[in-house]
Each structure stands twice: as structure tokens, then as C-alpha cells.
Length: 511
Image (cartoon, rainbow, N blue to C red; front, side):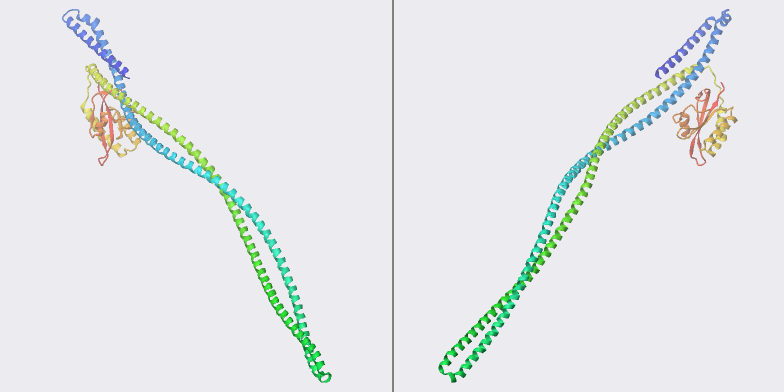
């Protein structure tokens, strides 16, 4: 672009310089030939063709400068648009850079948190692994205890059965022997009763024997008494001894009977104690059986817990791998964010260089505009542009009285703008070459002919009108019609004094 502008400027300067040289040459030639007779012939042969060529070349240059002026306006508009886009891009780049840095900081914090989570998960993984190992060991021990209890239950059950059987048999035998002993004692007691009765009979017999000798003493004499009496005394003594012995045996039997009764009582008590022990053994067996069932229940719960623990172990293991992958993904995102930051920084530097280039382009365009104005002034200084001030006044009054009131009725409708502008151009075609309206942000609502730029916010006619002034330009080449014209613009207000936008027009000029 810089090379093109330089070439165009050099071409324009060389053309102007050539025209000036040609003009000086013609003027000098005319001054030399004045007063001489062959002036008319020389003018016909040389000056007239040169003047015609100069006029033709001047018209050609005028067309060229029209195109150059139009190109300049477009270049300047594009430069402003690029500058505006570059500013927005710079703002967006700054925003992206700031957000990227925030994201990077967040990712860095998240990575730290993920590392902590991973450490906790690894700790939980180790704890779950240890707990699973402990549960397996505890389950094995519990199974051993259960087997031992089961064996003990079998042994206790067998011992109880044997003890009950043996004690029952022994108790029954003892009871039978005691019963037999009681029967023997009963017989002995009966026998002693018989002995006592016999002793009593013998005693009676001895008494009779002692009585009878008294009767015989008178008959048989003293000698008979002595012998028979002695026998009676011996019999009585024997009877008494027998009775005494029988009494002692009876007492002994009574004592033995009491002892047997005591043994019987002890046997009954022993039977009750054995029964109580058997009941206690049964209760113990039941308790052991309950313990066995409880251990079996615990084993089942341990098995269920082991299964759930295995699931938790698998979940923790999967979570560990997932968090590890997530950490790797976030590390990759962090790297990508770093690359984005680097790219954004490079983009910012590029945008800054682009801004500098745009500023240089705008400066060059302004320099070119100055050169073009100088050249255009030199080329067009002999072209008289008759501008009727009355026409400008008439155009302003027409816009204020005929166009704006219709636009204000429905300013928000683009269709209304189109209808009003098209009808006004047709009705006042002798005054206007172009009519358009703009929003406060510089965008075009409607333009006839279509606008040659995207946004007018940097144009003087727009900024003046937005500031509340009526703007009237000098003569220039329109970017829309490519003809010489004057631009006028003014603000548009509603009935409450609110600024709605801008209306602009190109006024036809007489050349």
C-alpha cells in the first residue's frame, strides 16, 4: 500500500510539473512571438494543438484525480475501519489474555487440589487395601473359631449325653440298692421283732419257771429249788441279754436306717444336682450354639463387607486412575493455555505492529490528501465551480421541512427511511444526488445510492452533526456518486429534544 501511494504521488507530482513546464514554455513562446507577423501561423501550427492537448490532458488528469480521490476516500475509510477493528481486536486480545491467565491460575490451583485429592485417594487406597487384608485375616480367624466352637459343641453334646446316661444309670442302681437295703433292714427289723417277742416269751417262761419252783419247793425240798431256780435265773438272764442285744441291734438298725435315709436324701439331692448340671450343660450347649450362630452371622457379614470392600477397592482404584488421567488432562490443558497465552501475546504484538502500520497508513493518507489537495487545487484552479449559496440554503430548508418530519414519525422503521429518502430524491432530483441516515453509533440506516463505507463515526460530517451542528463541506468528489458535490449533514431530534441520529445529503454542483 505504501509503495502504491508513493507511486501515485510521484505520478501526480510529475504530471503537475510537466503541465507547469508546458505552461511556462507556452507563455514564453507567446511573449517572444508577440508583435511578429507569423504569430497567427505559429499559433495555428503549434500553440492551438498544444492548448488542445493540454486541455484534453487536463481533463484526463481531472478524471484520474477523481478516481484517485475516490480511492483515497475508500483507503481512508478502510484504514479507519481496520484501526477500529484493530482496537477491538486489541481489547478482545487483552480480555482473552486476562481470561487465559485467570484460567491458567485456576488450572494451577486445580492441579494443586487434584494432587492433594490424589494423595488422599492413594492414602484411602492403601487403607482400603490394608482393611481388605485385615478382613480376610479376620474372616479366616473367625472361621477357625467357628470350627473350634463346632467341635466343642459336638464334644459337649457327646459328654452331656454320656454323663446324663451314666448318672441316670448310676442313680438308678443306687436307688435300687437302697431299696433292696431298705427291704433287708425291714426283714431284719421284723426278725428283731420276732427275737424280742421270743425274748419276751422266754422271759415269761423264766418267770413261770421261777414261780413253779416256789410251788415245787414245798414238795421237792430245798435242793430242788436251788437247781431249778438257777436255771430259771440263767434263762431270765439270757432272755434279758437277748432282749438287750436285740434292742441294741434295733437301735443300730434304726441308726443305719437313718443313715440309709440320709443316703437316700443325698441320692435325691445328687440326682437334683446332676439334673441341674445337665440343665446347665444343656444351657451351656445352647449358649455355645448361639455363639456358633453369632460367629456364623459375623462371618456372613464379614463376607458381605468383604464383597462391598472389594467393590469400594475397585471404585477407589478406578477413581485413582481417573484422577490421575484428569491430572494429566489438566496438565495438557495448562500447556495448551500456556501456548494460547504465548499466541495471544504474539497476537498482541502483531496487533500493536498492525496499529502502528495503520497509524502510518493514516498519516500517509493524510499526507497524500494534502498533496492531492495541492495538486487538485493547481489542476482545478482554472476550473470554476459555480455553487449557488441559495441552493445550499434551499437544500437545508428542504431537509428540515420536507424530509426530517416524515422520518421522525417512525424513525425506528428502516422501511420508513427507505420510502422517505427514495421519494425525496425523486421529488427533489434537481437538488440532491444522494440522501442517507445514520444511527448514533455511525452505522447507516438507509442510503440512496448505497453507502460506500461501513461506518461514518470518524467522518467530519457525522461528528459535527452528532455535536448538534449543521455541517456544510467544500467541493469534493463523492464516494457514492463519484461526482463533484457538497455534503451537508444535520442532527435529527424527536419532539422531546432527544437525538435520534444524523441525516446527510450530497448537493449537485454546476461545473
